[in-house]
Image 1 (tube, rainbow, N blue to C red):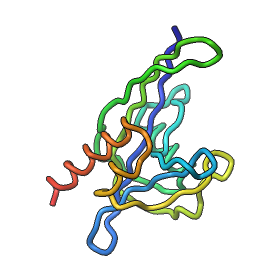
Image 2: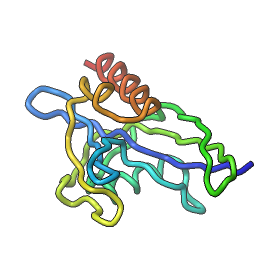
Image 3: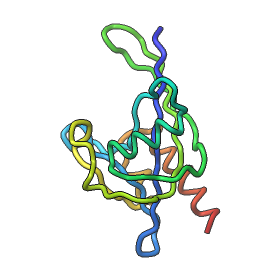
Image 4: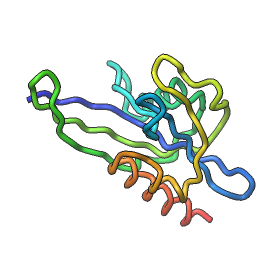
Length: 140
């Protein structure tokens, strides 16, 4: 069995009195997902999540807290892989979604946080958006 560890980020930005989260388009723009990627050697999960958000979505965030882990199995090259993706909540600091990394994603955009659980493609990421929503609601 192979184990893989990645990290991703939910960056929340308040615009026009509403909370938005940055998301990326992948698979030829057909899938809306959260920025995420492999944890590099010497990086913490939070550092990897911050880097991935910056690289994939062009956004700098300030760490708030860990949201949770998404765990799943998949098959690569005939081998079962157990994957853990740790997600972290960030507050928007700077940057623009027009600066996304074109080599890795098809686009980056701001999505209403309240719509994210419905719009994001992956179940675990929908759950992380729900967790962020409850944290943001508690902070108001």
